Image (cartoon, rainbow, N blue to C red; front, side):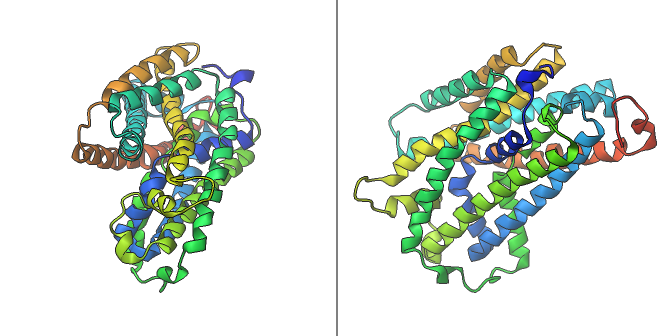
Length: 367
């Protein structure tokens, strides 16, 4: 992929790129995940996770500021050398592919359980991955414009979820701080899992128009939007279900919507799934794009179009591997644990090395 007009995006598009990269199937199960640790203070855990994510974004922005014309895949060999840099490139590519596979498996299992119990899982995975492949083959600007359009389904979801406050009980949230700060911080770790995707900043930084201040502002806005949306959904679920019930519903958002009744429509949870399927594709697309960009960079391709096909094929076969919830849970925990290395540890090491006089004097590095 080359830096040309088709790949240039505005800071506003970057904000939505990060916003939708962080959204996915996590919003359906996040309230239950944080409640299992921090109880009714799960909404505080979600806010803290957003703050932690913002700190990591600042680290990534600082890295991009020092290498303004290079993507992550060009920065790695400059900082770590050709051999180790190539190994890290491959590691990031595999990480992004597995992140996309995890989203496909998680949301596919939800679709199979709630709407398509007799549909083979491979058919659901194939349709999701094929749709994402079709869109990711386009230039970055086209992808970003699609992400802007997807704000419409998000707004619809927000309105549907807000209606549940007609039957909510805010007393379920009291007393604030009942779980203790230790559990609240542990819950924030669970919430961080749902917010992964912001690492796309390291890949698209050189393609964003404007200066570094505009870029960090846009990235921060994108993270703030996703944090507020996640917090709203967690808060809504905690206020809708009583504590004993909350401990029994693995997808609180869908159960909450299923309990609502409308005069013109039944089973609003199925309408929500239909809408949210579009939003989930954006998170899968982001990971496919980052992986395909890495492959294109490694093999010197002009763009990422052909690499997307190979990423999609590999993603499909990997998505078929988890055959039961236990394997999926193991895959999820493994990827989340590894994510701290790729999203925090390596960017932090790059920033430290790039801040030294030895690397700063090399071409392409700015202080």
